[in-house]
Image 1 (cartoon, rainbow, N blue to C red):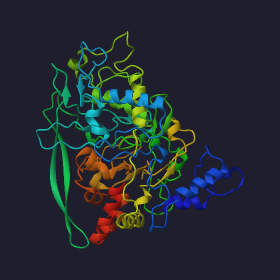
Image 2: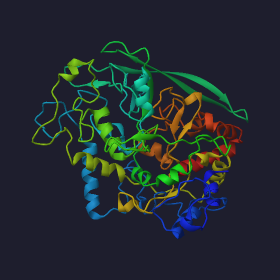
Image 3: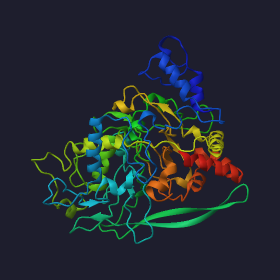
Length: 503
């Protein structure tokens, strides 16, 4: 039984309106509102018609403009006129192309010295999903190779266990392979992907070929990698709806957590608590492929530093991911200028990019009353997919932005970590996430990937060439759901794909 059914059943009208067990309870609602929220977010059992408000996955902030390549680039529909101005300023900074120092364009220099992209938009083209490089001649821009090593002694293990750090960088190359560099400096190396085709036979005899990637690094410019190095590929995720995910109450996320699988359903959602670099407090991780960032502001500052090499007041590293083993990198000029502030991207740069990222709107659903979509939705529920891809929430009354407060949203994620099996494992921990665990990605907007991003490559490394392949890569806690999908007749599989394409 899905955990939202459990939560609904144990709601009581006793004093304090608490749950009968230790399930966390929201504190931002009155007892009456809490009862309404639990009722409206309970999974449906009626698949003959769309649910109320299902066409508006982001509530009042849902965008309703024509579907085209710009569908992920519109602002939340319920922003004020003043907020629209901040959104546009943030968009300009998100699209900004940074240059190396020194430069006559004083507000744009500070790139690198080592980097993966010259601007946020280079990775999140049209605010959509990244992809692997096409062939060996193309450099990876919207896909990165994360690097780290395991704890090397008891002190490091203690620091990791206390959530003092998420990981330990590779000593010579840092936390991420940088495939570009400013003039006069060699890039760190080149990501190499070798694919092997793996045939999978479905229950009706249909054969689907999955491509299994293997990752390595060529043309290393700064010496050998550590013998303990761990690699993890990551494509840039879509940018829509992030502020609404930030507004999902922590209590509603933790209510679904079941790391010891006490209910015996085989699903062991686990939170990743991390230290917030903004205030040093341990908080729930929500963003990133392994939920390693507690907020959009932290995620944005980390991307400025790690991907572009631009320092901000929150991550003030003017040399980005350069390491002590790269003295030539550390000797390059940087873009810090005392008259502009203490970093290369001083306030309000980070504030505006954060606001932009928080307010990219989610497009309106399509074809919600199509019979095939409704049948596919029923299959999605029957297979247990909603055990991780939680359909809906009502956001907090205490959200950062008024536009996000108390909205019924349909992101299809629990924002928790799940063991996805050996097939998808990167064998690289990040905080509490082990090498088999990934945060459940939101599904809203997934049906517009081709329209916006020009491809249909899915999962954390883009290995899946379509939604069917993406489902067939599921393992671990999702093994039963994957097997159920594989054994469906072709018509039922097509219905489920039609449902996903309507999101």
